[in-house]
Length: 67
Image 1 (tube, one colour):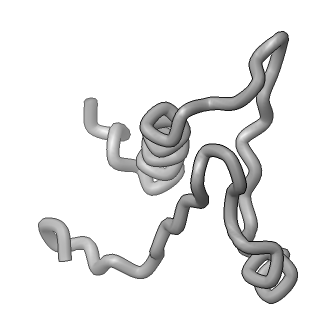
Image 2 (cartoon, one colour):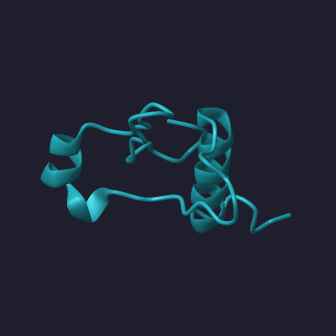
């Protein structure tokens, strides 16, 4: 637990070059999230992707509502 909030979600990130194994994506398609790459960018590094996803998940969880 973090504070009084139980941890119910697990985030798994694939490698920068290959992503997640296709069999994982096929097994849980409704739980797969894609971070769109906009503009002339080949890929995002893993640290940037994790930052984007965690920031979005924190917003959706209401972690910044009291700020």
